[in-house]
Image (cartoon, rainbow, N blue to C red):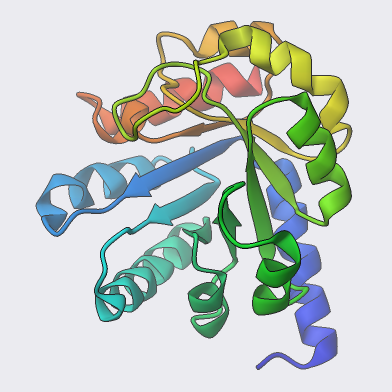
Length: 225
């Protein structure tokens, strides 16, 4: 466990890095690591990735612990913030940088209690009302989507595209906002034109023909925002 002063310093540093972050990579793991390990390393090696989130929906908790612990080492090596989806309890036990929860997951207060004050907490949002509520909820950033159609998960909402970004910018205030959902090198310019300065991307990098080139191109587009 961190001492109080050390934890405060860790929290300040994590939030500083998050505030400067542009490109957030979403990794959905399967039992076959051969399908994602090489693209992941290629993307991280570029230095274009600021944050990595692990989505591991497998039932075997031992595998989740092992996978998160392994990726934590990789992220530290590349200077990337590492967050775990849905499991703030595991994120705290492994001393990860934080966790991300959805609107239908556990409450923000419970997630924060599990994480502690010095770790990052993100929340999924889908419209201006949820974004505004996130600014008051004590989270460190919000994911906003879906922006475009995606194959990585079944969508229950219609993609909002650039209009979704434009409609939520004012509601976000100073809260870091990461558009998400089907973002690729082919459509990132639409979001940047609507005011996006950050993005969370999964398949658009990891399933591209050249993950390194995709990561660089996405970051370049966001840095020009």
